[in-house]
Each structure stands twice: as structure tokens, then as C-alpha cells.
Amino acid sequence: MTADLQDKIRQRAFELWQAEGHPEGRDYEHWLKAEAELSAALNAAAARKAPAKKAAAPKDAAPKAPAAKKAPAAKKAAPKA
Image 1: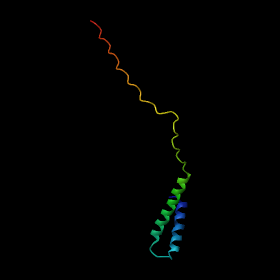
Image 2: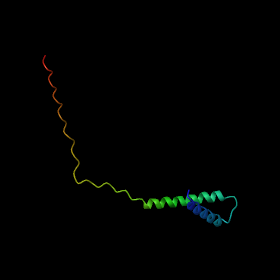
Image 3: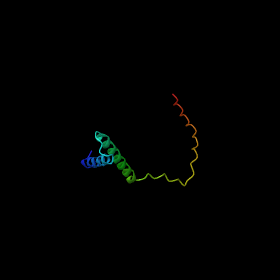
Image 4: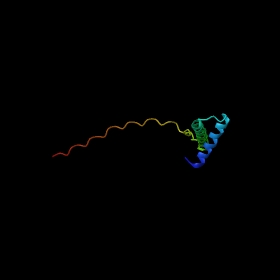
């Protein structure tokens, strides 16, 4: 975890603590909630930046018919002795 990310989590946890009226003994809960919020925000941002996968373009040609079966090859005659 980078120091910048830790600072953001710390700040958000502090904001949550303040919003809840400064309760004692819930620092870990606030940290985890802040961490989850920031993680979700980062994942959403990454998803928006990722290039969308292109759908396969339809082929103009009609599907090919199955190939005709070939006749079995003729056996070579054994040399006469």
C-alpha cells in the first residue's frame, strides 16, 4: 500500500469518525470502511479507463458447407518375389 493511499484512507476514516460523533473504540471499523470505499472508487475508475472489448464483426460470407469426404487411398500391391 502506498503512502498516498494510506493518507487518503486515514483522511476518510477521520471524516467517518467525525460524522459519527467521535465514538471511541471504533477506529478499526472506520479504517476498514474507508479502505473499502476507496478501493471501490479505484476499481470503478480503472473500469472506466479500461478499453471496451469490441464485439466480433459479422462475416459477410455464408457459413461453409462441410467438406466432402475423400475416398480411402488404394493400397499398393506387394512386390512379387
